[in-house]
Amino acid sequence: MASQNIPQWKLDFVKAAIDGGILKFGSFELKSKRISPYFFNAGEFHRGPLINAVRDAFAHTIREAHAEGVFDFDVVFGPAYKGIPLAVMTVSKLAELNPVKYDYLSYSYDRKEAKDHGEGGSIVGASLKGKRVLVVDDVVTAGTAKREAVDKIRREGGEVVGIVVALDRKEKLPAADGDDSKPMPSAIGELRKEYGVPIIAILTVDDIIAGVKRLATEDDVKKIQEYQAKYRASD
Ligand SMILES: O=P(O)(O)OC[C@H]1O[C@H](OP(=O)(O)OP(=O)(O)O)[C@H](O)[C@@H]1O
Ligand SMILES: O=C(O)c1cc(=O)[nH]c(=O)[nH]1
Image 1 (cartoon, rainbow, N blue to C red):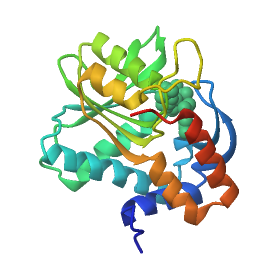
Image 2: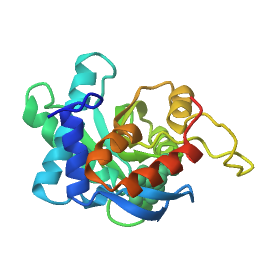
Image 3: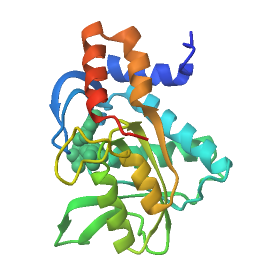
Image 4: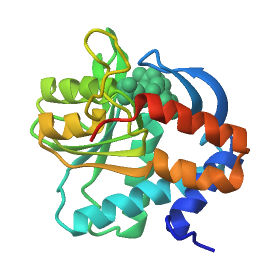
């Protein structure tokens, strides 16, 4: 049964995330150093049914955007580490959905530390040189990981044409002086402006809240709402 605010497939994705232990409640330090009462751990998508749920969500979202001409791409790039299986799953599912249309599609990912022997370098999978690259990743909080990915792809000679993430936490950019009480624009909005490419989030924190209202405790929901009041972007 779909709720009035969230389509059923999204609710199913939120439910799968909670049931599978991907969405956790407690106290978590983020890459941005913010302390969050919830955490989306895409590293937990390791069992068959969860893999299927996540690859369906990415492939469905990307296929739709591609068909609408939102972007065109040669390579799906997953930033290390959690983006790596997402890129592989996405290419695999797209090829399954439409083997002819997606026959050309490759995946690629980076190493966090470059390899200095064997094939060497910091890219595994398809070369990015001269390619239109679609980035897939788990979460946007402050946007740092996506900036690092875009910089790396450009250094490798690729053109970033879009970014698709599982979750937009809809948080504000960190203030230069560290004062979190200031209104600040959203991290994802700034990425869109700066790079001029479409950025699609399969879920936002609002979907999570709508989902957890049915699936988590009142206390967990209250803590997420309080955290959001502090870090929510002004736009
Ligand atoms: O928007 P941000 O503030 O950058 O935060 C979100 C990013 O932080 C984590 O990446 P991390 O670099 O910790 O990599 P991991 O995939 O190895 O967990 C997470 O996987 C997101 O990609
Ligand atoms: O901001 C982060 O570091 C972060 C948030 C989140 O929900 N999940 C994650 O893996 N990283």
